[in-house]
Length: 509
Image (cartoon, rainbow, N blue to C red; front, side):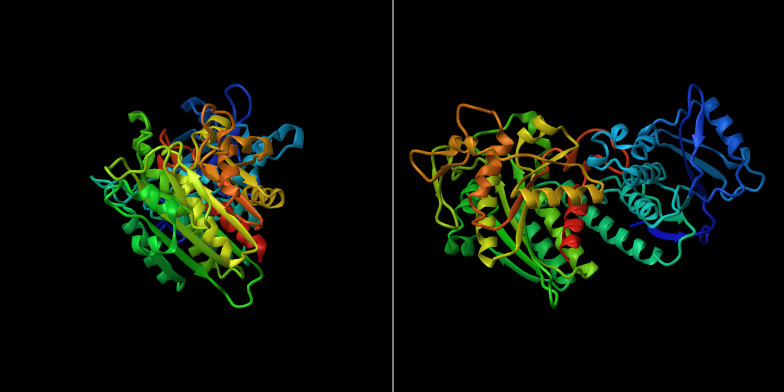
């Protein structure tokens, strides 16, 4: 991972690149962001005059490199990289009417700065040293830049041939003193958690079966001195985990349930986290279209996210007890695969008629939720790439959250603080009728209608939470980016949700 420092001057060795940011200032004009940034020694008016002649407009995510000698007699680095902030920064700093929904979706000032730093770090792959002369005069600004540069400096090491290595060393130029150690430490913990999720999501499914993911989770947990328990298929059978067993019975790779616990002395609260871990989802006998399958290796992103969150809680020493449950299975079409009209008996005794084998995530999550709430946590959050309906409703970059209103709203608040895009969704009671079955307690998916699919999935999960305050986070779209990278978000696994869970846990302490 990139080595990060926060200091008023670049650390040794001297930076190869100095990063600045600029915004549009009218037709054929840009304005370099100098307020709160350490830009001593640069002729900013000369730079602002030069940039438009290079075709640089200051639009969001635009970048341009130029020799620093063009605007400084003795430049602090041989090369300048200027990143565009577009109109987003101006909007984030404006009044509520100008901001609209952007700030509520992570586009506040910190979110824009995080994106700028991440965009710069992506552009600087292969560079050894860089310094960021961006607004960093407050702890919030400096923290955003620190997080952004580490999030942007990511490359999946499993690629063959090997990818261009990420930026090796970055300095956020700031005059702050007291807060920088804590800012750097928290940024590194968050970035390492996000990188863990990205790595696991990017791993091909032939190399990441339920058993292998369980082993990796257990290893990570033991590294952080967490309590670890892994239930194999025999233990799941003995325990009556019908959802996990039903989903996994079509694969030669059997399911697993992993429990990890961070239990500090004098914990202020107990939060259970449940993650969907379908290591590959073919849809089962309700087979997905071929075009929908390549990214289905990402269907374990929820489990990876709660793994990252519980290990981050331990590394940050949060005064909150956290139990994380990873419900792991592979949904395939083998001779033993479950069939539409099969009836499963879940961990808590609820019977479920399977009407759609591609609605498998809620089955494994139901088992894990029912087991998690037996320990009487104060709150339970579940995280899942659960429904295509989430993408239809909210698009590829915004996740949905629903559940007990107070918990749902607390997740939204945490997401806003973390700079992630979560939107509150309702759970209309009348939709529950589509889950009624003449043969079992519930059916796993509606038949004959496709309306409100994200919400009916949430209603299904709610049945397994008993009376525990609960929220369901559907990250189906934002968990995987199958398009071009943007900001600090790469192509592939994104790690979206880790920062929100950590912020939520911090708020409980």
